[in-house]
Structure formats: structure tokens, C-alpha cells
Image (cartoon, rainbow, N blue to C red; front, side, top):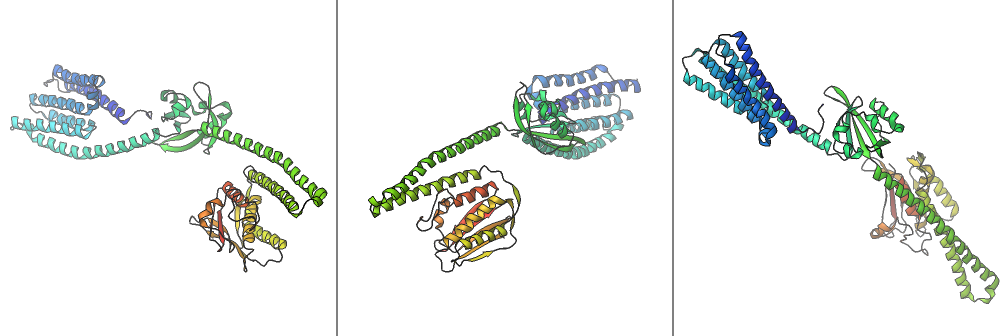
Length: 516
């Protein structure tokens, strides 16, 4: 298999040069054959050697001149035409013997066969047609003139057949060139190996590992990895592993680069090959490390702030209580009311701190995916709400048989918040109604929803719903700290789903979420 970096133009140039040398050598060997088979024939070595020398001159010029190299197919056609003209000269001098007639057919057919482009074939055919017509005009009485029209017919069929084949080959070559170009332009480094030995590489692999293409071709794939990844590399080469894995590749200078390795086996020209992609994970690893560091810093900051805030909050609440208990008789009603407000605000701030810490924990806890009966959790939540407010008569409809895949603890929190909000925001309705169910989405996956006929909201402010501490109603209207929907969004995001809402003022709200 030729290396990937050899272009179609380079391959074509190599082929034309090979054909020049081969055709020249064959024409010289043909002199020896005639010398042995027809010792009395007119067969001078000098003129034949001059024709062969022209082949050599054109061959050398293809290295010295880019113009000659670029149009070597035309020069090949010219050399073939000259050799055929020389053969016709010998044909004429030998009075059209039958052996020379057969030889002329062989010569023309052979040269037509080695023409590799349509223009070269056409040029050669025109030259042979001109020679044939000239011979017919020159010696119409000669016996071999009968064979020359057959020669022209032979050329016609050769052009029709070979021209179509050459056009097909040209299209295949263009398609192959496009595929190679796409292969070479990939962002990931790619190597194609046979039984562990690299045969081809694309343009990205060399810079990734610090090697040139030539240095990589012929290397063993396992040699590109460190000792700790050697077993995985050998398993991939043996076809025992196709799943992606991470490993440290060894660069030419001995340094290491973390890559994701993906191997795929396939057949190429009847040979079993494997394509291996090397994806540089350096930037991703750096970003992950920075994100982990930022999360640790944020976690540390959160706990520090929470700890530092709790002490003064406890002091504020404590001192307010002492003032009310020990010195309350010295304060008028307004002073006592203000002290009670201070204590209440301190308690609210404590709940806010707890809610912030709880929200931060949602992004750290590991997901444990399992089958979760959402219907059962919804029924339990409604039962608790009824027990907390037995005086309320809320019409609750829960669809049966709703099961999802996810973390049971976190999905319970989603339903707690959504159903709890629906219960809360319907408290001013004469006939409150809450529903939980699921419908099929456009992609065929279930979409879960919680619906109520409560206070609703203005869709112009829907973007604020899922932000921490974002409220569309005052605390006096509906108590709460504004963290529930933010928690819902984070939990659904961690499951790979999405959450959205629809509503209208005084007409209720409907919250949707998906769990892929």
C-alpha cells in the first residue's frame, strides 16, 4: 500500500516514467527478436537505437523540467508515435511481409494499451491513422494495403473501449483523491496499520507525536504508547478491543501526551487493516482540571462563607431574643415589632445559606441510575402535603405506571419541588387542581409534566423561573426562598435532560422535564 502522502499526480508521474523505460526497452528487445526470427529482414540497429534514445531523453527531461513532467502523457504518446512511424518505415522497407503485418497490429495494440490518459490515446490514434492513410496513398498496389483499413478499424474500437475505461478510471481517481484529502485533513491523528505495522498516517498524527510521516510509517502501533498502555494497544491490534480508551502516547522527544484511542477494523483490497484515531485530550484534561479546581475553590468558599455568616446570624438572633426577653418591658410596641423582624430576617438568611449549600451539593453528588417509580413518589408527596394541610381539598390526578431511569433521591427532589409548588400556588383557588403525568415527545421519548390551575405567571418572565432566588411573587403572597426550581433544573441537567415551563397569569402553570 503506497504511503498516504503520495498524491495522485505523483503516482501518475511514476507510472508514466515506468512506461517510458519499459516501452523503450521493449522496442530494443524487439530488434533482437526480429534479428533471430527474420535474419534476412531489413532491421538496422542504429535507427532503432535512436528511437529508443528519445525515450531516454524524455525520461530524463521529466526530472529536469516541470512542464515536461506535467505533460508526460503527451510526451509518452509522441514517443509511441515515433516508434510506430519507425516500425511502419521497416514495414515498408520489408515489402509488407505477413510477419510485419502481424507485428504492426501487435505494436499498435500494445501502444494503445499503455496510453494512460484520453488525450494521449487520441493523439497516438491520430498519428497512426495519418501513417496508415499515407501508406495507402503511397502504395495502393501493395498486398499489405488490405490490412491497413483493418488497422484503422482496430484503432476505432480501441479508442471507444479504452476512452470509456480511462474516463471511468479518471473519475475513480478523483473520488479517491477526495477521500484521501478528507482523510488527510482530519483534526484527529489517524494511522492505518496492518498486523500492528503502520502503513499510512494522516497530516495530524505527525505533529501530535513529533514525528515525520516517514518516521511513523513502518513503526509498530504498541511502540507509540507507554508501558502501562501496552496491553491495551496489543489487545486493540489483535482485534480484541474496539472500545475507546485513554492512554499516554510517547512523543519523539520522550514527553507524553494523553490521547483517546479508537480502533476500527476493515478490509482493504482483501487485506485486513485497522484504522486507529488518536484524539489529543490535553486541552480537555486541562479544562477539566481547571473546572475541578474552580469547583473545589467554590465549595471551599461556600462553606467558608456559610460558616462565617452563621456565627453573626446566631449572634443577631440571640441578642434580639435577649432584648425581647430581658428588656422588652422598656420597649414600646413598635420597638418589639422591629426586634421580632430582625430575628425573623436572621432566620430567613439562615435558610438561604442552607439552600445555597444544598444547591451546590446537587452538582457534586454521584448519580446512581436505576429504575424509579415516579408515580409512587408523586403519590407519597401528595399524601404528605394532605397531612400537612388537612383542611385543603385539592383535586390531584396522578397518571399510573410512570417509570423513569435516574437517581431516585434526586428525582424525588424534582417531584417534591414541582408538586409542592403546584400545591402552594393553588391555595387561593376555590377548586384547586394538580396533575402529574407523561406524554410522548416528538422524538418518541417521554416528557413528564406537573400541571396546576393556580396563580400562573407571565411568559415574558419565564427566563427568571429557574434562577436561584428569582421570584415572580412576593413572600407575603406565597412564602418560599426561591431555590426550588433552580434545584429542579440542575438535577434534570445532570441527568442529560431539559426542563421548561408554560403558563399564564391566574390561569395556572405547566412544568415539563425530560430524562433521556
